[in-house]
Length: 376
Image (cartoon, rainbow, N blue to C red; front, side, top):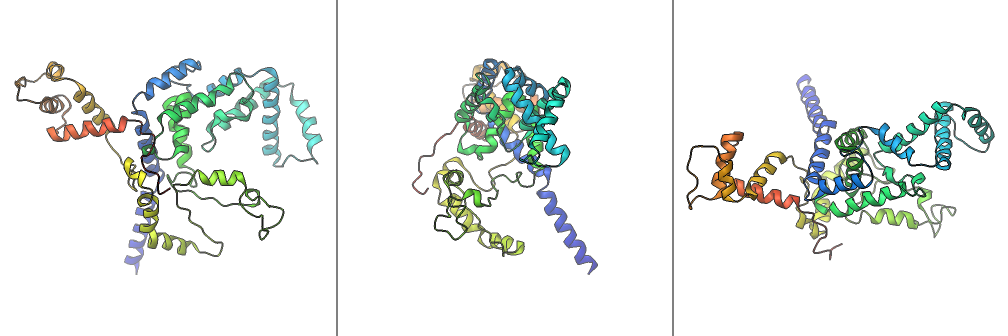
């Protein structure tokens, strides 16, 4: 009995390790690596930073970025931000919601504290930092930015990069949008902070899996009650769900148990995946499948790709070995193989070199649209 119990514990431990924060951290980093190698991406980011007067490598941290935003606001906008940040701070410290009953007291307290410029400034910066660090919301869509001549340009400029470089092979549009924004403004530091925040949230770290539970605010006839003829999804909810046309919705009733749901997924996994991939044939064009987010040695692949691009004449200049590789019957894959072995201690066949270079070149392409959407 003791032996069986230990085996059970070991199985749980293995399962926990498989889907640990480290597991998801690796997955998110692999996705970012797929973005960073896209042809023209780094140059486009560099140009956009220059246009928006962002430091060459992005801001060092959220404080610097928040101060950048704050510096672009006029006095009236800063006053609105000051009041909003005060309301948030008051609500948290007092542990109360702001309503008609305490509104007068809140405004009175705000007026009293306005004179403390240092405290006011810190509140505004912290309020902006909170938005920057949010792993669900795009911070350039901040409501306070919309009427500002400069700040209102930030989201369109960010979206230009998103629209230019996203493709089906990069999977989740939402994650990709955050990658673009965080990298543009905060560089690799921003990516690391986003991933850290994302993987600590059990609701958000599962790539390709989420849940949605509608309430009365999602319904058109919300005042009629759940059995009214107009108690149907409103336009906003239809728009939200339509973004996931390529997904399978798992409907769980309140009387279903956890064990039943898990078993349902296990029993029907093949048909679920068939609905996602086999039915939606355009995904096959981009090699999207359950094990899509695989670890790969992108640095080594890029090195091979860069060598493979060079003509034989240039490769011979790079080769420092003693073997004579200049003969007409010697192809450049042979020279690359010798360079890799002698300079990098990498042992690869000529065929593997060609396949690696070809795969890497394909991964650099921005693949935008599917050829076949008949099954959608």
